[in-house]
Length: 54
Image 1: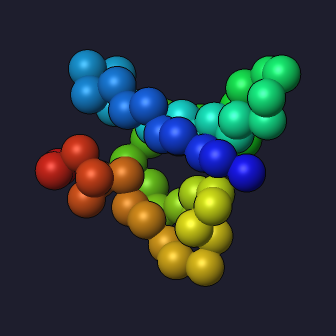
Image 2 (image 1 turned 135 degrees about the horizontal axis):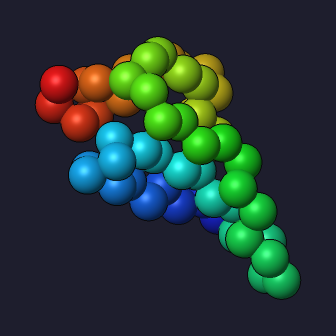
Image 3 (image 1 turned 120 degrees about the vertical axis):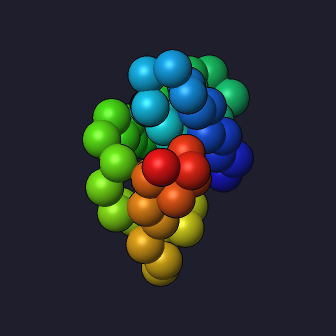
């Protein structure tokens, strides 16, 4: 499975999309700078505030 994470800095949003060949289902959308487990890296906690530099 392939994943990609578009990040919109102006909206402070991260979306994890899963590519499956036919659709690109949204797996998770994070719109607040909070710690989260984001596929495919569920084993670690990623804080959106760190990603955005807040």
